[in-house]
Length: 323
Image 1 (cartoon, rainbow, N blue to C red):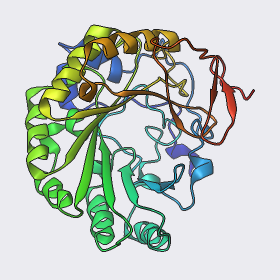
Image 2: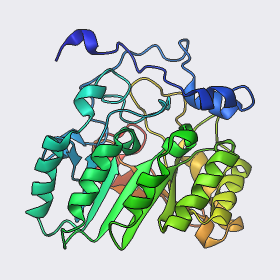
Image 3: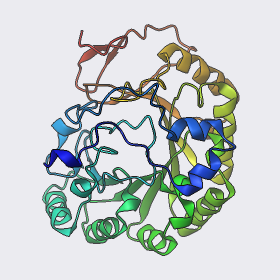
């Protein structure tokens, strides 16, 4: 790799659409605008926070869970979230390397065809909608693979650059399997602007099963009322809140990380007030371990100092070290 192409820190990238919103939304400003006073750490390309590199059977994929394969179609996003958990690949000058072309996608397709235990393929990145040709090529080739039953797209693009979403592409993708899920990453109700709401309604009419994923962010959504407003609005729009993650201590930006007990208190209050369909699972994607583990609420008497991953490894939650 040519070292001159690598950024010294996680770069700022923001669309004109988001830039306009920063003037009226402190949450969007906090999520996207680089703060050099609080982001002094240089980028670390060697980090493997969630054991994804250790779980890469073929370039461009992550295989951590039974029956599923994650395909990272791109290391590019429309905009760089300051709390991105893939700061070892995204926003550090590796865009060309991460952009999967047909040759690499063909190798992934062959891998999938030769493993009939894979029933769900998830397109991610970066953002898969920044590689629309690659996304359509992958999903089209998988249409005839009988053991692949479900396709899933994880994207933040409709909230970052809604005017650039290719609706004709999205309509074609929705018809390639009986069930295609579309998961939108959203963290604050200010992101549900009219342009994005119109897209959500269009996606529903295309036949997608709509989900949302969120992450707890200090200074952005660290209170019950903000999250309640967001989850109820998503529920109303036909988007099922799926996960809300404990924020990770990522390479360059740690200011968003909340205390786990504070997250649990908020989720306990929300469980008391929200319909089950409007209430997401609160999970920890355990650093250095395997598994998205559900966090118990304060409805239970519990000890959250140690968590056990999917392989039986016990990890301390105060410093994520193995017990």
